Length: 592
Image (cartoon, rainbow, N blue to C red; front, side, top):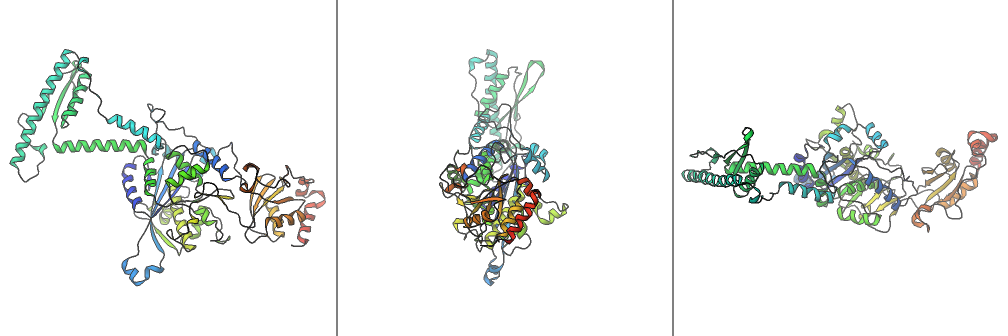
């Protein structure tokens, strides 16, 4: 369901009810940028360094979309449970995907405390979203407001001040003629209200036992009174304030009567009309609040629900969401962890789950991107079925086929639907449910292109994700490509190594669980492939006695450049076929 500024007031009450009844929810976001140019993230970053980089991005860029998909399990019917049919059938869930479109609202008279920050965009992020069909026109024109906690307090105070009754002016500020007009108006209002209410009381006595609409009761002398022409705006406003306080059932209308001033008409409203006016005023106030505070109300409901939540590769998503809706992010990662635990007591990350090789073989998934995981289960899941009710059919596969087979991926609401579906399937394949899964699988957030997962349960440590075989730290010429490194590793009977470029001349290789240790493999590569690369076991930041930025090789093995003889000629076939001879020697070498 697409949620915009215009339909948010109608959608929000239904969202609250569905959130209260759901079992868990999934979150995804689209942003105007994800990385800052002054920090180049690499796989050698410690979690604290990654947090620093993403914190800068979250404070600079804005959220475009927030997808929230609520999942509720459909209980097994009593008859099916009695016969045992439901025990073997896949669990059934109903999903309610909401795609919230966000754009900061602005008014010229906003104070510094009420004003949102500028919208900063990254060209690469916008190019990515444009390729996936993002409608930027709709984002700007239809996006709903959002704010953090401090801005919400300032904006609510502004709204409260706008609807509060101002103080009446002192009598000394008016002329004698204006004071006389005010006194006559008060007396006229008192007499009018007394006459009309007496007529209504008599009508009630005559119609005992029946409910009448008093607006239709005829009143001798009428239910209106016209005051003399008054030119002073201050006097007219003074009268309105006094009558609103003493006679809330009185309506005051002013109509221009030529250059001499305004004619003021007093009308007594029936209880039904008073209720209607109060309802309209309440609706107007509610609309102003929703238009002003916007998605902050949704965020507050998510926090109050205390329901489990899930994202995919969602460390940056949570930073952006908390920065925009909660407040400025803490400077250090441990403080952010404490705040995240306070807001969201149970957090899941499907990328972290899928990367657990103790649960899923390394070759189980072609890739562990959100689309890859969803494709692995779509249409062939024995673990659960997910249904979309009426009103949320926009992401149904048949609906998408009707649009010419277009893919809704990278629309936040659809990605949230995929994320929740993937979580149910991953847990089901591992033999768990959301209720029975071990605590160690939750509160772990994967870091993109990192050797770590953030452990939200611990303020001091994070999970180092490589296998016991470890990680290779490879130095080589800039002309050495990944397939050259893979060939060297294949000669050592090591495959399925994940290679990550650190610089043009440095690559890290994450070894599979069945590979020799990084120490053994480094020794073999140095003996057999010394003309192509130099290998050493990688020392991660949490084991490095120096600062995190110097993590890598031990002090004895660190070199600034790799001293290779004529690397360009070696790789381009020069030097008398040196490359060919080296590869032949590798194929003939003795395997350890």
